[in-house]
Length: 470
Image 1: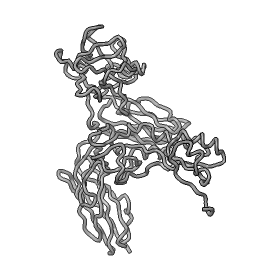
Image 2: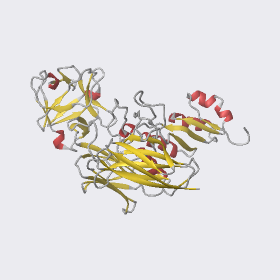
Image 3: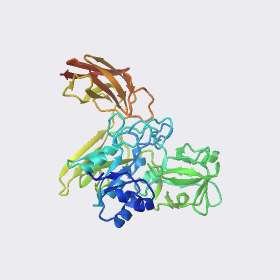
Image 4: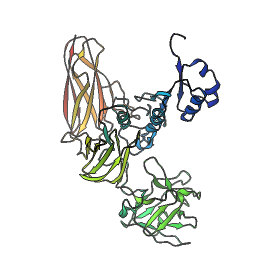
C-alpha cells in the first residue's frame, strides 16, 4: 500500500525481526514487548521509526491489595513496576513514537494470569465496568500536565491480611516488630519468639510447594511446627516439616515463608542481637508485618510528603517515570500526601480515610448527566457507590445493589469490574466489588425524565435522574 505508511505488530525472535519480511514492507516498525530487541533493531535500521505495537500487560484487579489466587484477584502491588518499566523504555528513546498499552479496559476472556473462576482479562488500566484502577493514575501522572497525586491502598483493614504475619523489612524501621529471641543453640532446636510473646509457626501441608507468609501463634513448647534448628549454613530448619524459613517475594512483601531447604541465600539468616537478618538482603530483618502497610503514591509532583494521622512520614523526590512509596505502621484514621513543585510550593494533595460500615447507596450519572438523546440508542452510565454515614465510599463493600427504573428508558446492563464475578451482565441487580457497581441506562424514543433508584437490604436507597430529548 503505497498510499500511506504501513506498520504492524511484530512478535517474533530477534533474527526474524531483523531479517524477515517486516523491515522490507514496514515504514514504521512495530514491536510487541521484547524490550531488549528495540536498540538492536534501531542500530541495524537507524532511519526507521518504531512503535511499541503492544506493551505493558500489567495484571491486577481494582481495589485488590492482597493477592488472593483462589478468588483470582491479583494485587496491584504484584504488578510492581510493570507500567513504569515499559513507559521508561519508550519515553527514553527518541526513535520510538510511543506504545499501545495492553490494555485500556479489561475485556471478557483471556483471564491471564488465571483460569476459572476468572472470566475476563486483568490487563486494563480501567476495569470492565469502567472504573479506574490504580494503574490509571500512573499514566495520568506522566501523560498529563495538570497536577496529579493518587494514594493507595485504601485505609481500611485489608482483606485476607493477618495481623501476625512475617516479612522482611528494612532493619531498624520498626524496632519493636523486629525483636526476636531464638531459644535454641547450635545443634539443638528452639522457638523463635517475638517481643509480643508469640512464636513463629511454620505449619505447612506441602513444603515442596511452600507456604507463605509464616505467622505468629501462641507459643506451645510441644508443637514441632514452632521448633527450629539454626543450621551451620544459616538456615532455620523446621522440626515438623523439614522445610527452611525462606525470604519469599510475593509481590507485596517480601514475605517470609517456609520452603524445601535448598541452601540458597533466601534461606540464610543471621542472629544479630534481637534481630534476625536476611542473608539475601542484608538490610532487611525478620518483621511482624501484620500492622505494617506499604503506601504508594503516583504523582507528577517534584516531591511528595506522606502523613499518617497528620504526622509526617518524610518527604521523597519522585523519580522520573516512577513512583514513591513508604512502609508505615497502620493506624486507623487517615493517610494523606502533599505534592510539591521544584520550588517547594504545594501543588497537589489527597487524603484517604478509614471509613465506617456500609450505610447507604450513592448514585452518580457519570456519563449522560446533561441528558441523552431519545433515539433508542443513546445511553447513560450510572455508578453506584456503597458509602458510610458521612458519604465515604466503603472500599471493601460487596453489597448487592438492585436497580429499578421509571420513565422512557431501560436498564441494558450492569457490572462491577470483578474479573471473577459470574453474575449476569443483562440484569437489574449486581453485587458491589470493592464498594462500586454500575448500571447502564438506554433511552427509548420518547422525550422525558428517567428515574433510576438503587436499593439494598440494610442500606438507605438513592435515586438519580436522567433527561431524554429529541
